[in-house]
Image 1 (cartoon, rainbow, N blue to C red):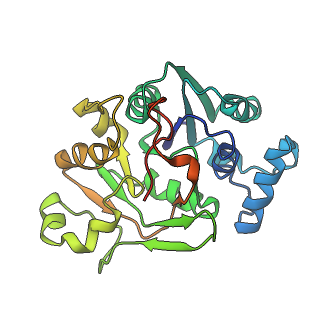
Image 2: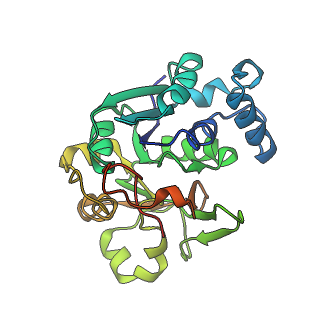
Image 3: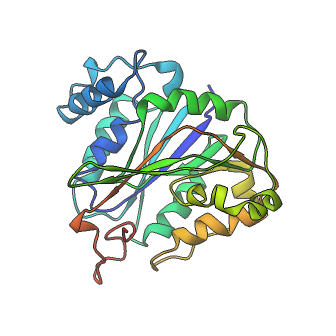
Length: 261
């Protein structure tokens, strides 16, 4: 089965969060929010045999954990998923180079029709993943946009980031986007973007390494070459904010993956 969606997860000091993120890709035959929470608990306890996986969807997914030289147990967490689902979960090891470096390395390994980056302390809406993958299977656009939620770590409160379009699942050009920017701009962001793999790799744009805020370049520069942009009104990315451990470190370039709002 060919892969439809490849997820790149730049990973550094994410031991406390990674299990939740990886578990969110375990789509079951009867998936809802409660099932997703159960899957996370079972994965945390190593009870993968109790997770009723929808293999047809899992076969279409590729989750690449890029170990950016992390000093903690993040790789051990990821390895449990690789052991149980080796056709879906992959670990790629590299020396520490920062968030952009980890994305560049991940892009070299993707096999899916589309690629998306999800940070190691974030996750996706499991119950929407099957529908999203099915829509990507039928899509040919260079760029796909989704609404997403910003989740407060302390309160759990969700802030909605969405588009304000009259029509979704139709193809727009960059000119359309520029002329109607305020209808698109909230999702023209790191968390809302999914790239066609061939489109992204064809332009061979590499993110700068060992600097911060390179995610803005990931969002804008490849997109500037897009001939087709396809918005889907389906929430996927869950962006965690309020984590004190996400503050910038002058010692490790990858701690954290990015500064948060």
